[in-house]
Length: 339
Image (cartoon, rainbow, N blue to C red):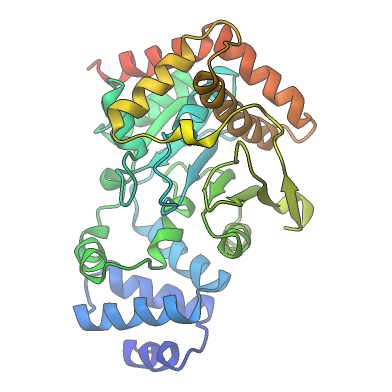
């Protein structure tokens, strides 16, 4: 097997096997590819459309190269691939905090914004969280308060070879799908959002190939990587053999109120929501609250398949209105800023 053979195959729009994909990623992570070779492979994969085997094969090698932490057996991750272009506030980050406040450990894997106005790392910094921690400290967060943020840049040092090349190419590549599948805490249950429903199913299948106990991928009708507030959301659940489920949340709200221009605005929406003690008349606050609730409910449903979606929404709401979500955020702020 050689890179030349890989290039010939993908240039001819032929799919790579799991093993060929793993070999290719090993060469990338080792810094052995020329920029021209990297560009041809990434562009060719994107043009023909990446397969679940290609995604799984490359993700398996990224996992090997990443720095690991000791996870928790019942921990979950909730994240998105980004790239929706909708510029919404950090819904999955807010939901991770709420889910943890409900008693479910969350190992949140994330990064700075690549195309949006605020990535998970950006908003957490704005909320006062120290995101640049030694792996052992991140591990302590997860085991002591059931919530940890795993900053992708700190845990994937071998990406130093690919990162500048990705930037030069300037198009969506298979790397957009790999991050959510390479959580250093080795979580077995995940929710992954993607703005493309065709790739939602492929990512779900790839996650299963990599040993996920249960994986749910979601894609909104308007191209969001979150459960949508006022449109349908397409859901693929490994529990149901990835059959497509269409969810309409039927919750009051307008997604125009989810848009932010900066991490500061995103952080303010989250803080305002966590300070709510009851339903308010403001459509803007109701929209933010319900968006967080339906996405938190999806995570709670992932953790316990016996709970109904509506019961999970009520559990999330209770843990916002009773102050538990705000308390959980304060715990994360304190533990990450203490030596």
